[in-house]
Length: 118
Image (cartoon, rainbow, N blue to C red):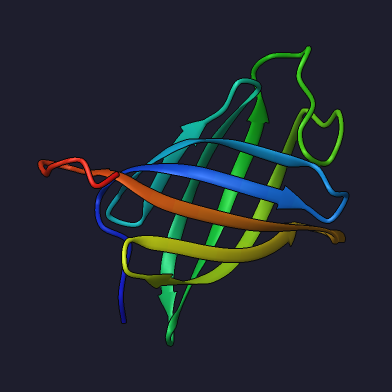
């Protein structure tokens, strides 16, 4: 099963509410850390058959910014997806609120110890 290389990724996402966002994340092993202008992301991925599944905690660090789900201080996202080439495509939802869905795309920017890809 293809897996995400250790490195820095540009992340883009869209919520079921029609809001868009983006930021950067670092992946090392199966750990995720990163953020954007208003929120920090911390989480973990693991293999599940041909898929990667993940759990990401999203925490607001700038009280003037809203998430793609509105003005929420902290929430958890459960994700499931696949890796194609150096790109991860995931779908998920806010834990406990399945109506708040999310599509996430991770594009490799730079491998750890490697050359830039973009």
